[in-house]
Length: 99
Image (cartoon, rainbow, N blue to C red; front, side):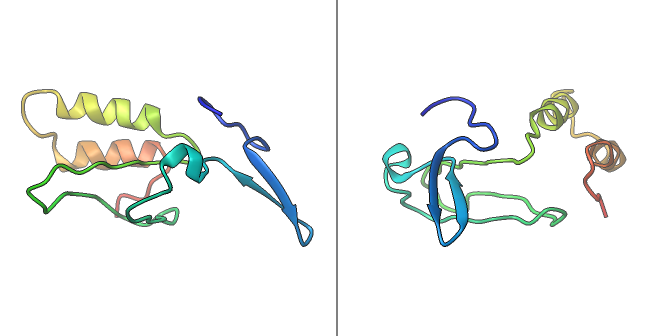
């Protein structure tokens, strides 16, 4: 299973009256070594690496947020950091509370 996994697709299992749709399983992720963090909708967050070693980060968005990150990239590629208000306006347009 590669590419886009649509609603109702994935590795589907049923137990106790529930249907579970696994979008990625251990065989695809190398067993899931490392940590996992679920950020609830509306929670302010960021990420960083405090180690001198390189780190890998896998980010999943549901619904997809690639258009937001494309625009964020454009804001930050202008040679100098954007004004805070520019980022707040962008967040607002994509339904994020920039408080």
